[in-house]
Image (cartoon, rainbow, N blue to C red; front, top):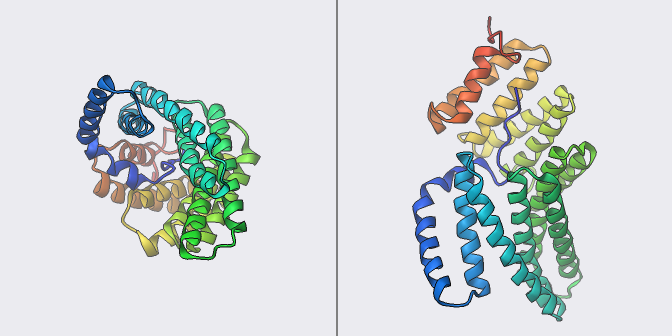
Length: 305
């Protein structure tokens, strides 16, 4: 059975976007009408790309990647506009200000390539995003200003870097580059701790990602330790979320691989109860947990038999 991987920006955020499909569609219709009567500007191109990307994310949940591919094309057009603006700016601090939205767009293009099944191409965009963010951090840290605005901008850049590192880790893993994946996830974790402290849910996400890497390498005990650490953090901050259910599921798989059927069954049953309550009995993640309990790791022997 495969591990359950939470979306890079969190299960809650992804699921929370689903009811807004109608508003995305309405926005797209409005933007399309405007585009047909006037030349595209940076803002209109960006708005159109965001609308298509949001629609694409929704459709991808239903295994329809066509709309996501359309969104990717629009976002790549936005990139061309942003890159031209960035290249034209000569003043260092203002250039840094333009670098961050460009880095975020590069990151989003990378995520779309990854979701469309091309982690190698995603890595190219993630690396470009990471380079821009690192340059911005260097400029901010070297600035003589020490006001709250500088601190906020630096914190934002550091958090963005942690997000990009997490994405790089996932892409390297899917591209079969295990060591590089581990290094990127470790870097993301250290950055996240520096920014928000050790007990923040964002840290739990990074710890869970490391658990996934160790599981893939067959280091089940180390993976289980990371999933338990993530659960401990989540229990204190947001115990009633789908992310907890997925982490419990992953822990159950680890315990099963370690030859510990009773702890495995207990974790999987907890995961199923929580997932059913939060997501509904027909959700695909709920069905995945249920099938694991009913058929076991090899698909023939249920847990508890």
